[in-house]
Structures are given as structure tokens and as C-alpha cells.
Length: 93
Image 1 (cartoon, rainbow, N blue to C red):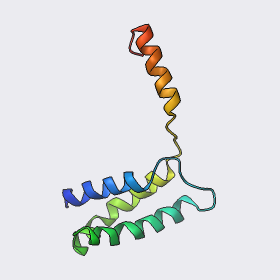
Image 2: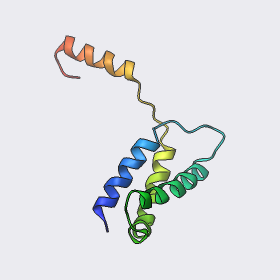
Image 3: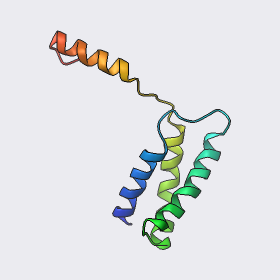
């Protein structure tokens, strides 16, 4: 297990798969497969050996699928409003 590779892969997933950005034209499974096929060659370009990538493939494919399937959108306006209300009420909630 390569922790350095897993950290790189987690960063890659966060940078390349924003939450809630899956168009309806492509299924979650198809998109996860396409992005997984993109992740592993980029890992080789980043200096990781093919052995490291293949060793972690079983762990990363489900992570890519989970990231692709995430439908939550982050509402910045709601976050700002809740923060302002919490400061006004001074209760922190």
C-alpha cells in the first residue's frame, strides 16, 4: 500500500470530480469507469509506477464511483446566511 499514491489519488478525485456535476447523459458507472481510466495514466505521468497504481486499483475505483455518485451541491449563499445568523444569535448554530 502506497500512502503517497493514495494521497495523490484523493487530491486528483477532489480536483477532477466536483460534487453534483454529473450530467444526465452518462450513467454513474460509465462516468466512473471513464474517469478511472483517466486517473491511472495520469498517475504514471505524475511519477508513480504501474505497480503502485495496480496495487491500489481495487481501492480507488469504488472511491471514484462514490465521488461521481455524490449528488450533493454546496450552496454558498445558504452557508453565508447561516453563518451570519449564527453570529447574530451568538449561539453558534
